[in-house]
Structure formats: C-alpha cells, structure tokens
Image 1 (cartoon, helix red, strand yellow):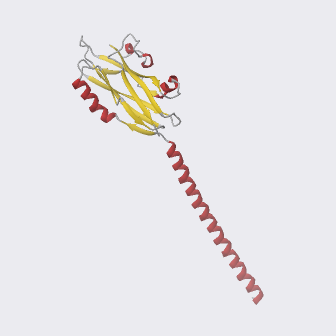
Image 2 (spheres, rainbow, N blue to C red):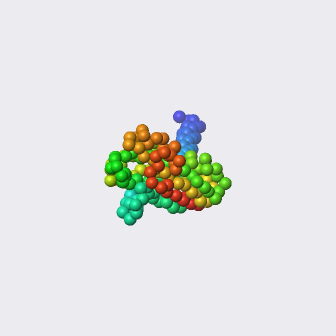
Length: 202
C-alpha cells in the first residue's frame, strides 16, 4: 500500500472514531437531560397532590372522652382545625345510641357550611364535604364512629369557614334517608348539631 493510501486510511479511521465519540457524548448528554426532565416533572406533579391530614386515630380517643364526660349524643373531633389550601382533612364523628326504647339504630351524617368571613359562596364550600353514603349501625347502649372528609381546593381564599355536623337516625339503614337531606329540619335528627370551624391559611 502506498504511503498516500495509508494516510487516507488512517484519517478515515480517525474521523470514524471522532464521529463515534461525538455520537456517544450526544446520546449520553440527551439521556442525562431526559432524566433530569422526568425528575423535575415528577416533582412538579407530586407538589400538586393534596396533602392528607388524617386525624381519625386521635379522634377516637377524643370522642370517647366526650361521651364519658357528657351526655351528648353526637360528637365531632376536631371541632376546630387549622389547615393549608390543597388539603384533604379527615375527621370523625361519633354517635351514642342511648335510645330510650333500647333499639339498635342506624345513622347518617351530614356537614353543611353555615358562614365564612371570605367571599366564597356556601354552596361552593359544601362541595368540599364528603360523608359516607351508607348508614352506620350502632347497637343499643353502644357508640359508633364515622368519617367526614373535607377536600379543600388549592385556590381557596384564606379565612375561617364555619360548619355544622348533623346526624339522623332510623331503625333500618333505608329509614335514615339520604345523608345530604340530614339537617336540623329533618324529621329524624339525632342529638344537637355540632359546630365546626376550619381556619385556612398558607
């Protein structure tokens, strides 16, 4: 092979190696950028997920204290709570079945906004409330608890939101009626409505 051809061959191999290295570096750089982008996007959407504040374990103890020290038929804990926007707040309500006739009873709950010091309409605030659609059974001379969840939006105005929690009863699950219809004007209220104040701040 002539010196001229050998020189061209060496230059061709060198160019091919340089091209391969450049391609590998480009691919590695692209993979790194893609990984960083995925990490950032995942973190961004995770930050948008609501914070869940689950107070049910504490509520069991606090509600038991209420029933031990008072003659209340309905108790809610907490009845005052500070939370941030974009929060799912899980509370509990307790029912004492001290029916005079000694019957086993079923109960449904409802929670309605009564006032606020913000500009929000009460009908919009009521959309935060999630109560069980099924009735809760409480045998004679026993107590039972049920959950109440508030799904507080991320864009909610800061301020105080006042609610009342209601319980309605029946001798069968169907007799309790629809939870959303349970309030002070129902024909089957149980106990006195419990006021609850939720303060929202960043």
